[in-house]
Length: 436
Image 1: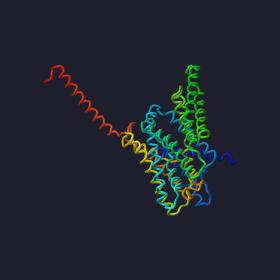
Image 2: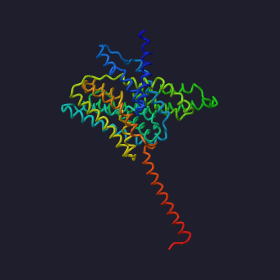
Image 3: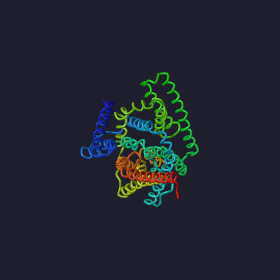
Image 4: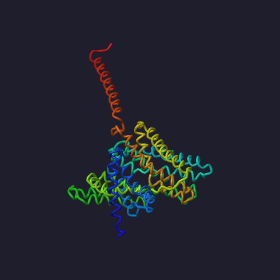
């Protein structure tokens, strides 16, 4: 009967994430925080540790291959729907800003992370220090996307800039990791990585054109009726691009899913297809994804020195992303408030940071004792990002300005218009009656 235990696990996850989400909403927190906390509470880190301590047996939800696979589908669907909800014109307009935000959001964490290692260990090698910095460069945008959707800020300039920066950040992080691995003596070719990245975007363009043309033909052939085959074809297209991105081109699968979403949004029946994914997302995939993050958490025993390093790592991870990405946004002309929102949106870390850390351990560049601090850093960044993001958007409109800022701007514009009208009347009066 053990083979059917996954049904009970899914039941507990769905009920727990909904209950904790409701409690989070009542506490004026984003619901995604509740879903994350549900997995953390019912997993080995909290409930498992409590039952082990008092009863000598670990009684809690456990990570499994099935849950991992469902969670992977969950993050793919989150990015797929984000792509379908993205304003493509706004995203294009945010491309330059996104690149600057992503670039500074990689360089500053890289430098500050390496500096932190030198501060705590004067004898650390350059490759080891820079590898810890590389761990801090990776942004996990899926949590931020869900928070932005909940706040209704996905299609704003800030939302589009965060999306553009996160996608570019992923590519820059891949290049950064390749260079560092090469420095450390790994058998990695930077040229091949760049060729694969360029090849992926060419592949997406060709695949997107093929999908768009097939949808045009099908839409005309079926007299523009809404058919159930369209969402099925759209999801299959999403899964194919996600697979191709990860397996063929070595790019994150979520980038392929996001690209598929944008292509579908520009195609016939895009809105109809988008409307069909909300149900499957909130019924199963999204709750499992967020709960699984908490289930995967294992808190190791740490000494006082490691605890101090953990605290410093958390502070550096937040400040470096917030400062680097926020500065990049300000350089590109965004307001201080918008820059702060963008910086916060890029703070979240995730599984990519763990993958980079694992690679560092495998290459003997990162000591295993640092995995605990890295895990805690990821947990803290994952939880605080949606909380602070909601606070940053509180009282702000879709442009990112507060009501008072908008009122002040409108008053200034009204004064300028009044002065312009007065000036034009003066000129007209001079032309009519003659001047001196």
